[in-house]
Structure formats: structure tokens, C-alpha cells
Length: 171
Ligand SMILES: Cc1cc2nc3c(=O)[nH]c(=O)nc-3n(C[C@H](O)[C@H](O)[C@H](O)COP(=O)(O)O)c2cc1C
Image (tube, rainbow, N blue to C red):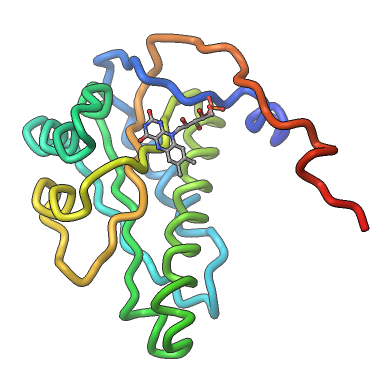
């Protein structure tokens, strides 16, 4: 798929088939996540790959009952690692760059999944401690996004966006 078709066809999908993800596809998604830019190339993030059903269901609960999360065969948990970014960038690394690093990496994974015919939804509404507990994530990491990945079982239409002329401020 051409790059702009990937961007235009992506939707948040909240219904998944049971079909597993081919290991080669999952590998491509993870490699794309690793190719994301990061502050000082420090890659101030960690990715937890969850396939275990019980842990996925734990993530449902940590995300206030969003049960579509565990429907997907794979959930990636993107965490900021303030310790990595703060070594060079101190407060700005701890408070901002590691969050941005994790976010961009998740975006690369999301778009790679789309290019491979997989579906995703970005999940940001969750309790940090409950996510840490469900996925075995150490206390020093900050969960930033959950990304369920699987073959979609719904095809939502395009969601509305603010018109460009309201978002872009041309000076
Ligand atoms: C930071 C962030 C947090 C989000 N959190 C959730 C969430 O907790 N649950 C959910 O179902 N969707 C969540 N979404 C998905 C948005 O609802 C979705 O991207 C938006 O409605 C636009 O739809 P589209 O992705 O299909 O274009 C989140 C998206 C972002 C970027």
C-alpha cells in the first residue's frame, strides 16, 4: 500500500477476529516501531508485547472495561522510560522527550500494522498502575499507550476532522 493510502485508510477498530497475527508481520510492526525518531536517538521508551489472554483481560480492566482490547490477539504497551532520556536531557528528557519518543514509536507501529492489512486502536484511557500490574511493567516506566493489533472485524467509515483552515494558522 502506498504511504498516503495507509494514512487515509486507517481507522480505530474496536472489533477483532480471533485469527492470530503472522509472526513475520508482527516482526515488521516491531521493526517499524524501532525505526521511529527519538530525542538524541536515545529511544526513551520500552515496548511490552502481550499475547497472554489473562494479561490482555487485565488490560481491559486497567482501561476501565474496554473489552475490545483483549479481543485483539496482540497488545503492545508503549511506555516512556524517563531514566533513559534524562541522562542527557535532564528535566526536559524526563517530562517531555520520553513521552514523545514512546508516542512516535507507537504511531510508527500503528501505521506499519495498517500497511500490513492489520487493524489497531490507540488506547490512552487507563489507570497507569493497573496497566503496570497487568503487564508486569516496572514502576519507573510510564505507560503511554496501549495498541491492540489484529485482523479487524468491522470497517468503520472515516471520522470527521477539523477543517485544515481551523487547525493551520498561516502567519
Ligand atoms: C491519545 C489518544 C487516546 C485515545 N484513547 C482511546 C481510548 O482509550 N479508547 C478508544 O476506544 N479510543 C481511543 N482513542 C482513539 C480515538 O478515539 C480515535 O483515534 C478518534 O476517535 C478518531 O478516529 P479514527 O482513529 O478512526 O480516525 C485514542 C486516540 C488517541 C490519539
